[in-house]
Image 1 (tube, one colour):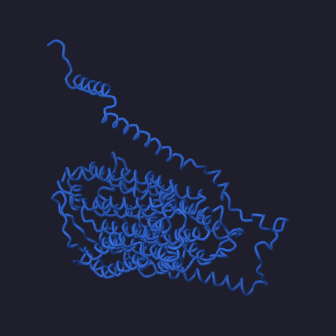
Image 2 (cartoon, rainbow, N blue to C red; image 1 turned 120 degrees about the vertical axis):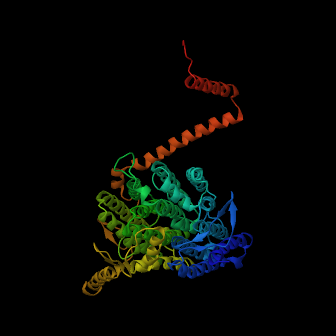
Image 3 (tube, rainbow, N blue to C red; image 1 turned 90 degrees about the vertical axis):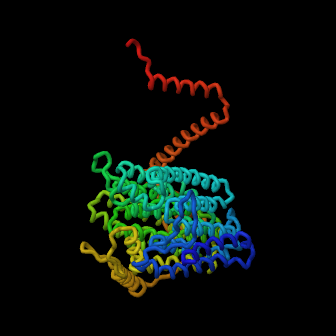
Length: 634
């Protein structure tokens, strides 16, 4: 048994064991121990994947489907995604194991059920990351989709079930596109090994390779919720129970990014992506880049309109996927490093933000931003987690999100793409505005009377949040810790390798050293703090109701915290035309498919046999007329 076998068997065996014994109290900490074991295996595996002479770690398991041997292997890319997956699961699992298990939020299933489905999600994802051919990739891809659906459907509320079913419909559409692409490969090559796609690209006409790339991009883009396939994710993840939403939001949809890197970048490469369409200067790379850029903008400004904290974060999750795709699709060392690093960064701060919101819901019973405010005095550590998380999400120094976004910005400028650069800057502006709304409406301003007795959540919930935001800060201060893994991934998938050091990158056209940037930033804050606390006049802390503003004394009856309908002027100017357009398109597609399905159902059940016979007769008649026309005379 190889080290890869140990990882896969541990995930599958733990899922089966927890199915039968998960409800017992002694099993409360079983899942976190399993994830710790997986991390230890991945640490041992890191020595192998970092060795240039090894490249891949293979499994000894032998499986055969359709007379084809399935290949299971890990490389540097699989290892990095596995690390993110297991760590996000560990944080969510610890969160579930303590106080949350005793007093879980209304609507959520028992904590041990979430733990079990979480284990199943992790096991299927680890299996998908081990795929070494298209058969194993397709099978594990479907397993991941169904496991995600199961997690979403755990919430018994009707809105959650509808959102989960909507996700499943999108996932099935993506699976059909995936299957169509595999059919093209198999028809031409007679096999579905990864190397067959490389041969297909080299031997078949470029038009067929372009069609394949579009089909794969559509299938994987649905999983990533890339425009225009994005309408399923926000509701589905927002309605997912508690810490399960943190896990799905952090890594689940990034499985689509993994498949894009493997199939479109590693196997198909620039030969297909840089192909001009219909003898024009427009190529697939630019089309995909602009789709990514629009994905950073539109969902971000939709997030600005949300009054529910979970929905605000899930809409941001869609937008952040645009940054990842845009960086990778540039196919250079700096941009691809930024895109891949953003996957790691996003997982850490998005999981922390989701868990901080769940902590607020745990104490207050609501995630409605219009019903919160002032909680910083009652939940200061949860406030700190959200503060660091939104700095990372907004891409501001000294957090890790700044590094990955800076690399993407730098790549766009160096590649002569000023319009794409402006587009992602607009997306970042929307991010800053909406995350300010999130922290302002949740923790700042006036504390509501019904929340006067609220206190901080227990340490079993605080610990994973604090560890996650520590990672956000440490990898922002010393990004080289992550960039060394990114460089290994770039080498494996055939991308130019970034020249990195502990503080950032070295480049002839501009370096980045986050150690110096952070120290200068801290120096500025330190000087400001000295001026404020030692050189300023005397200050006195007062109660929020012992205050005076606008000619009135503030009491509990005066809401001085203007949270309701935050940014109303901006929303009035922007309107909801962008979201309405995509909703309209989705309804049109739904109507067409529903009509077609009803027509096929009626034909199959022969509800209108006479009409069916007439239709067949007319088709045959037209065929005879056009294929065998009657000739008059000689």
